[in-house]
Image (cartoon, rainbow, N blue to C red; front, side, top):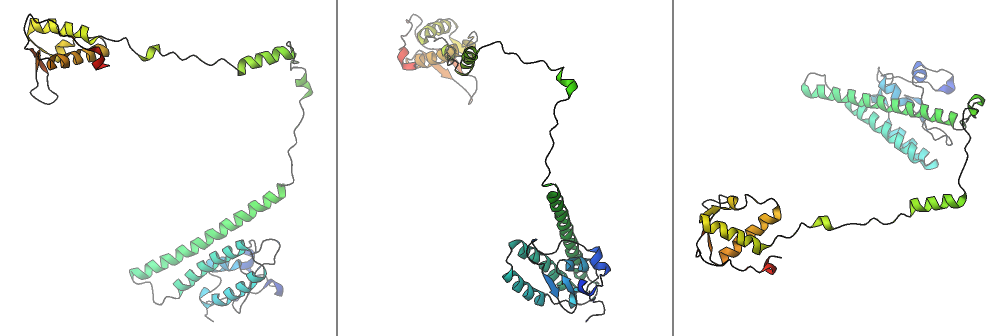
Length: 285
C-alpha cells in the first residue's frame, strides 16, 4: 500500500472518522433496498462516501481496486435491480477511474503536457465535488417534499367586519329574460361583408385614347411623364399606358428610350387630321 493511502474504518467498528462525518450524504439505495457497501482492504463502507474522501484527498485512489468494487456492484445490482442506482454508480466510478488514471501517470509537472494533465485532474475532482453538491441538494429537496407532502392550506372565511360592507346581490331579471340576453350575445347575426371598396371605378381606355391623341397632335412629342402628369389615380395611369400601346400598334406613335428604364419619349407620327382610333375595351379587361 502507498504511504499516502488511507484505510477508513467502518461504522460497525464504532470508529466514525472525520471523513465520514464531514461527508454525510444519502447512501446509494432507493429507500427499499439496502445500500451498496464496499469491502476492500483500503476502504470499507458506503460507496457514495468514496467520492468525498477522494475529493478531500483523505483516500489514495491509486491504491484502491476499482475492478473489485465493480464486480461487487454487479452482484449487488443483480439482486436489487434499479436503474437509478446503476446510473449513480457509473457516474462515480467513471470519475474515480479518470482521477486514478491521472494520478498514476509518472513524472513531475515540468512540461506543458504534465501541467495539462494536472489541470485535467483538478477538473475531474471539481466535477466530482459538483456531483456530490447536487446530490446533497436533491436529497434536501426530497426531504422537504416528504415533510410537507401531507400539509394542506387553510382557507379562512371572510372577516365578520367585511361582511357588512359587501352589498347583497339582487337579481332583477327572470330566467326567460336572462336566456334571451344570453342568446343575443352568443348567437349574433353574421357580419355583412361589402365588396364595393375592393374595386375602383373603371376608366375607359377609349376615352384616354382621345385625350392622348389631342395632346400629341398639338405637341407632336411628349414624354410619358408629361402625359400622365394630370392623372390623379392609378387606374387612369394604367388606362393611358394601354391607350399608348394601342396607338403604337395602329402606327400613330413612335417610342424612343435611350437607356433601359430611362425617359420614354412618345412622338406623334400619324396624320394630323386622322380620326381617333377605335379601341376595343374587351382587349384590356
